[in-house]
Structure formats: C-alpha cells, structure tokens
Image 1 (cartoon, rainbow, N blue to C red):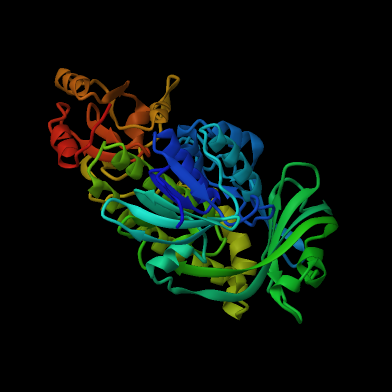
Image 2: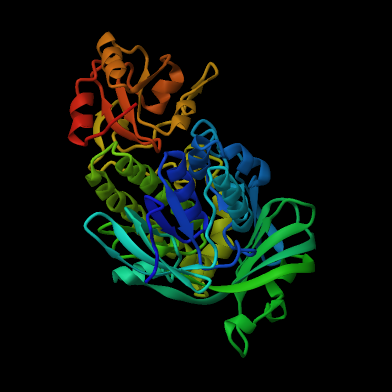
Amino acid sequence: MSPVTRSADVLIVGAGPTGLVLALWLARLGAAVRIVDKTTQPGTTSRAVAVQARTLELYDQMGLAEEVVSAGLRADAANLWVRERRRARVPLGDMGAGLSPFPYALIFPQDEHERLLIARLSEHGVTVERETELLGFEETANGVHAALRHGGRDEAVDVQYIAGCDGAHSTVRQALGIDFPGGTYEHLFYVADVEGRGQPMNGEINVSLEASDFLVVFPMKGTGHARLIGTLRARAGTDGDLTWDDVNRSAIERMHLDVDRVHWFSTYHVHHRVAAGFRRGRAFLAGDAAHIHSPVGGQGMNTGIGDAVNLAWKLAAVVRRRAQATIVDTYEPERIAFARRLVATTDQAFTAVTSSSLFARVIRMDAVPALLPAALSFAAVRRLAFRTVSQTQINYRGSALSAGRAGRVHGGDRLPWIKTNGSDNFAPLQSMDWQVHVYGDASARLRSFCGARPLRLCTFPWSAEARRAGFERDAIHLVRPDGYIALADADPGGSALGPYLDARGLVTG
C-alpha cells in the first residue's frame, strides 16, 4: 500500500512557466504547494520568447520584474522583408507610454525564463519534484486524493486542490474527461537557436512576408545571437528525424542572413484549441492544458501566466480561510472567455500570415508593409495596438466579482496605471492583498471603515493624469490582489464596500 502524505494545500502538475508562476504566487500568499513534473530537467529549447507588459506588471507585484527586464532584451522595432529587401521598419519601443510602467514587449526566451522562476521559487522553500508522474486522482469529501510515481516508488497524496499545468497532452485534463476541441495547422514549424551575420542580426525583430517559407528572426542577448522560427517542408521520415539540413534556405537567403552555427534545433506543430472547461470540482486547468494557439503576437506563455495568477490568489484565499470557497467559481468564466477570443483572433492572423492564396499574398506582401507603419504613426492606433498585444486591455467586467462604475472605470477593469509627482499607483500592489484606492480625498467615514476592517487605504492626489486615466475624483476603487478593480463606487463614503466584502466572505488585513 502506498504511503499517504498531506504535505500541501495545492498539488501542481507541470513545471513550465504557468505551473511555476502558480506555485510562486501561492507560496508568496502563504499556501503550501507541491509542484511535480515528469521531465528530468527544465527545458533547454523553447519557441516562446515574448514577455508582455501585463506579465511584467504581475511580476512586479512579486518583486520579479526588474530581474526579468535586466535578463531580457526590449523589442524596439520590427522589420518587414518582402522580395529580398526590407520594405518597412515598424517602431515598437514605448508604444505603451503612459499606459504601463512597462510600455514595451520584452524578448526573454522560455528556457531562461523557467530557470529564473525555479531559482526564485527555491527561495520560498519549494523545489520542483522532477521525474514525478501523476498516475491519477479522485475527489474526496474534503479534497483530492492523488497517486504519484517517482523512481519506481508510488505515493498517495491528499491535498485540497489540484492544478493541471501539464501542457497540451495534459494528464489532468484527460483524467477529467474534458474535451479539447480545435485543430492543427498543416505546416510543420521549426525553431533554431543560432549565431549568424547579416542585416537581420541588427538587434531588432525581422519578419519575412514572402509568398512561402514564413520566417521570423528574434534577437537574443549577445552579438550575432538570434532565434529563428519558420516553416519547414518535411521530407521523408518523422518529425523527430528532421534536422537543420532539412530547412529550406530560401527565406533565410532572401533576408541576407548567414547562419554560422546552430546551437539547437527542434520542430513542432501549431494547434488552435480551447478546453471545454477550465475546472471540474477541485481540479483546474491552466496554460497549454487549457488552451493552445498560434505564436502570432507572442500571447501563449503570457496567457498561461495570467491564468496562474488569477487562480493562485483565489485558491490561496480559500485555503487560508480568507474567502468563501465559491470564489474559485470565478476562475473559469474570467479566463475561458479571453482564451476563446484569443484563439479566434490569432487563428485569423496566423492564417493570413501563412496562407498561399493570391489574396493573402497581396495583403501580406504589398498592403501590410505599406499601411502598417503609416497606421502606427497615429498615437491612438499605437495605444490600441499596445493594449491589445500587451494584454493590459483584458477585463473581467462580466465576472461575479465585478461591480459598479465610477467615471470611465468599471468593476472588472485592470487598475489604470498612473504616475504623477513621483507617486506610482501600482507600487502598493506589491502587498498582493485587497486594498482601496482613492484619487483625491478619502472621507472620514471611509477611513474609519478601512481602519476597523482592516483594509489598506491608498490615497493619491487628484491630478490631470488621474482624470485622463478615467478615474472620478474621490471615488472608491476596491482592488483585488491581482490588480483588477473589484468594485468601483462614486460614493466617497464607501457605503457599498461592506456589503460587497460580506457577501463574498472576504477577510482583509
């Protein structure tokens, strides 16, 4: 009979970025976690390279953003190549100026990203349990009973919740019997880490928009270092037998790129799928276990990290008895709606980028290079593009946790970022706890309520920046641990605060 242990509140299956961030956020909030993975070591190859602004904002709450930014490379521009020449240069740097403390996208490959997260997680006394397989699990009256195998030894584990962050072939999702509808694109793709020379090795993103052989060159830190992602025309043999020698060099040659050395090379298929549900009972899905989509826009890894943070603070609140168990009911509706929209839009964009039809080629090779730089010269277009790609535009207005409106700010919106006179309204979010924000003056009644609860009260001077961001003067904004507004109330007395908190059994302070 396998020994039974109860060493954690949450068992996390899968130690990619989603699982690691979920474990790290839970540990920071005082929940006990175990994280297991079948692999012997962290990944050494990866195709995910983009870290978006919203991810950096969430990392900043953990004190991690500065280290990630330092290790990464800012994506300042993208060059579009057609017919063997650079047709357009699209500036990307600081597109989100005034919208986020991180107004840019960052290039930081997933393999390096994982190692950094693992190191930070170890500081909280949590180690990834490698070569550990989930055999199965069942829900009990008080939690989840799971069976693990490590090195031929079986272990039975009792936890309160289980989270499947174990990728597209998720054991957790399969055990739950949750459908994973969608499809697979016909193209086979490769990713290669290379050293090289030529115009594309200029520290900027370079994209081929040719009629065939899609190729993107992402700069890496270090002179002449880049990561290539492109289409591969498979020859005889299985995908696993393919090597760099099987790559069609036409797109590389048309971009005038000389590859001197290939550090590693791998192939993969691109899928577009969203699980029929992200939760069943005490089991949850996040990241690639819940949704997979094309690499257009660099959204995949960032979406999984968003899942992890959304789920983490809710699970932590329940296991620490700081909220009713029903708060976890909001995870699926908040995240699955965004995943479905994302898969639909990236599918359309990816099809346009890779299609060989005459119409798609004309749009891609002639219209896009001519129109995109001109469109992005308008501030309104740049701001819209940044909000969309950076994921700062995601909101949960339809959630059961979202209520009220004050000015242009709704319950469910990401807290608008402002900085004025050296005062950054995101700085208090590092407490990762509930808090009230007032832009202007806090009433005596509100101060008394927050002091008695206790609930952190953050006041910021009324300013032109606050007005432009959409805040209403002296209004109440109850902010969730993940930086989204739960309640927006124009009443300076905060009369809605108590009923809101009590109805959800929220314990603050």
